[in-house]
Amino acid sequence: MTRTNADERGVVQRSCADEGGEIRTAIGEPAGAAVETRPPRNGTHSEEGLRMTEVTGDQTLVGRGNEQGALLFRQWFDELNRTAEAGGTAAYVFVMGSMNELLSVFDFPVVFPEINSLQTAVRHVAHEYLNEAEDYGYSPDICGYVKADVATQLRGGELPMGRIPKPGIAVYTNACNTYIKWAEIWERMYQVPTFALDIPGTRSAGAQTWSGHPDFENDRRYVEAQIKELITICETVSGKKFDIDKLRESMAHANTMSAEWKRLLELNRSRPSLFNALTDGTIFLGVSNGFRGKEEGARYFQALVEEMEYKAANGIGTLTDEKYRLVFVGVPCYPMFRRFNELFTEWGGTFVNSTYLWFASGGSNLGFQYDLNRPLESLAEGVLVSVRDAMDSMFYQTDILHDMIEGYAIDGVVYHPIKSCRTVSTGLADSRRDLMEARDIATLFVESDMMDRRVVSEAQLKNRADAFFEGLAARRHQAAIGKAV
Image: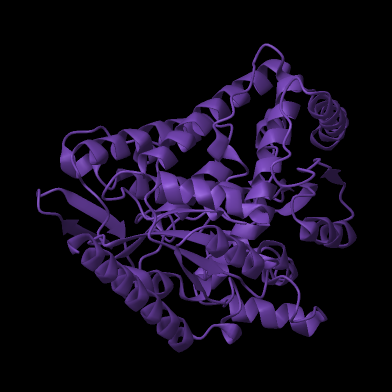
């Protein structure tokens, strides 16, 4: 069903909700995506129904991004389901360095296992998949995404939102250490080729190099050589010859998406904020991952920016009466996704940005533009810059957080380490301490998980969130007294 809310201007803001009132969103994670949309009566979505709606007034424009994001996500999974039913295969990829621009040249359907896994948590069935993988022999201590995917493979690709095809090839980067061992599971299960793209990272905090620097050019050539090797493998697997003009077309769409993604983040500096980075933002991530390098994805983000610019010009914010502007560090708590967000919105807290929107978008936040006159060289440069930035947002957050606090007028920072992902969570306590030593900013450190409900305690999370907001209120009160004096 669709729930409508009208603000004081009479503008209707829509959010997709199920019959129980739980908001379902399309999210792209390590993760791109948690979406649930009810299929039409005939069981399929028409092409006409998936086109961007024409703007006929405020009620059509505001809320359009969430609505269309859900439809695009459903379209993506309908395609995967058809491929699986026909016995076809797909390219298995990850959000940090998916190489969608290149894979689309060979017409590979793409599967993001991270997105599939988190969907099970949002739909409250992750425990079934985790238990099955643990019964199969996987430790409770390893990544919950991996275990949910193993169970998915054991079930023949069956997921709550449809069936995914088996892998025909797996492409991954070193942005997450788990990617490497994860891909080896598919290699053993299906005897398919896997390709590891080794992306040189930032050597130390603040030591990035850029185009023209000898170190950067060495790294770029190293990545370009690997891309050429990947092209040869894709030709063998797909049976199709590499088409450089088709690559240019895909890169042009990626250019549009990256530019609009950067603009989208900048627009949320508005007061009130235009979207919630934890909920709405993950809808946008779903599209950015699943439709990167495709015309639908480019058009979606153009329309989304149009919506946000309209909201900014007219002072239209989220459905929350914004009192506190927050930054989120880490991966969301998907087992209680809606309720986790409510722990903050009930106090008037809105997440205006997050490190998740950086690393889970594969570095699109930089707005990097490919040079279509030298596609392979520029693709290597873009992958190097984007994946490196995604890794920096996990490993060197402090400088990024300083920029966010200044640029977005942040009142508090919420750190959320999780049991399932040590890559994201390791060092967060030290990062928090470093930030607090450098500036006077309120912070909250809460632990749960992105998949496993057995280690998520709503009562403990609520107690800490309540204390956090009480502290924010006291800070604001003391600041007001100081000004009065």
